[in-house]
Image (cartoon, rainbow over all chains, first blue to last red; front, side, top):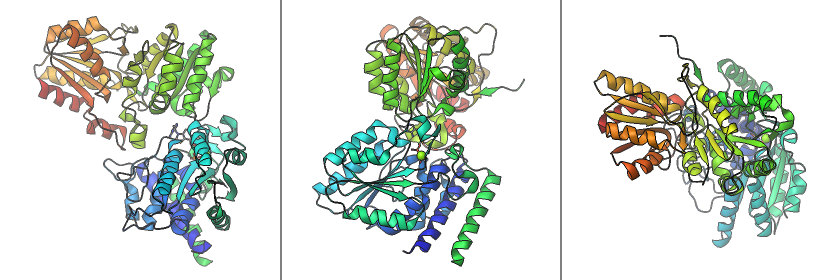
Length: 279
Length: 312
Ligand SMILES: Cc1ncc(C[n+]2csc(CCOP(=O)(O)OP(=O)(O)O)c2C)c(N)n1
Ligand SMILES: [Mg+2]
């Protein structure tokens, strides 16, 4: 897919995030929006054998949303990919819904791992990558972490083990939006320098721009060439990206837009969509 | 009737810490990137030099708390119940429980009333986990007034304490002149002769409302608020069970290992009578609003009433 097509899909993902969190009156728009382009690139360009008609294909690439609170972004991408109707996004977080507040692999087609407790997803991803080795399959495993999430010690236990085992079918993407709940990551418990840390754990490290598909394309292409070590792609991003009043605001981490904010956000995204169509 | 005030117990926790920080200069508070939600931020703003936001690293926070406590500090370590007691369980057991250090694991967002976040964030096992640790006091306040009283009592008590607070606004039920909080002492809210309903936490209110409905039908229910699940008020539990001959427990927690189990431990030993455990039956929570879930899991007044009735 060319960049313009990807941009259009990413804009729809962002609409899905706003629609679903607004309907749920709860959820996490900020970190979902910062990762919208990453979700789009993974599901519409990068990952292989992803087929809504065969969601459990054993040869498929896997994706683990380690920062599980940003499920609205994942759900929107899965809906656009055809796993379930986009209209169902309004069922997010409702009683007996298959769209739970955090990813539930038993409930939602296309979800490869249940997550929500930060730090655990990357370990599960390492496990999946090791399984590919046992089974001599060539699927790849992708996992997305928050830059606050990597404060969890478990992340570095997983990183150490994956480096040690030279798990080269694993790519960890860090959504480096600079914010966690209580503020800026460097004010709460700085994980910087993130790149040097992964390097020290024997990972190949690539820095990328989370909102530039050329940059993402180059990063994921480079990752494919890496042998004998896992790859970390550190993506500089903007929390809340795409809706002006949400951008770079820690306060938009875990609250849903009210009716008025919903209208404003959707108007901005509609306009962005129209501009893309004129290109 | 005047309108009932509704306040979350976590609000009482935050307010109490901020007040007691003046009185206790050796009070230290820690959090793990949830200071706004747990309300520890109220202390953090007032006493920044005695407040540590440890980032998203609950295990490290708890063992650091143990280190601080070993020098004579009174330490409150907070996160959501799921992460405070789940992620950091082994650190609590071995760094806090075993050396009997003066650390208070003060967890908010316990139970299903976490609501929309769903199963991964709805801790239904925290009381069970903490109750098993030797020497750990376990306390679940029923409203904001009890929450504040429990924080003070936890500070005055030397040793490990687990406190569980809730996310959602709940009715203030202890606003009366003769209210008295004492760790380890249950409170009889209503006397009765046909059945004993023992409740803890925010569902004490459901139990009281259910008892009123039963009363209207001629069933005399005794209602006891057990805010301290460990050490439990054995005398009170036994005496009431002897009197009524039937016991129902009500908790916003798994029926495995929580209040119901604690009550059964006492009753089995001294005075076996039939016990119905109302709570979440061996299952995970799910996403929905707190009010919808209270109904779904039959923990609201109607749900409790129906279950007690079927049991009688
Ligand atoms: C183990 C654990 N501790 C705490 C939380 C609560 N929590 C949810 S999101 C979040 C902040 C995450 O920040 P970051 O990883 O930077 O995510 P993003 O900015 O991409 O939304 C926290 C503390 C959790 N889900 N899991
Ligand atoms: Mg972040």
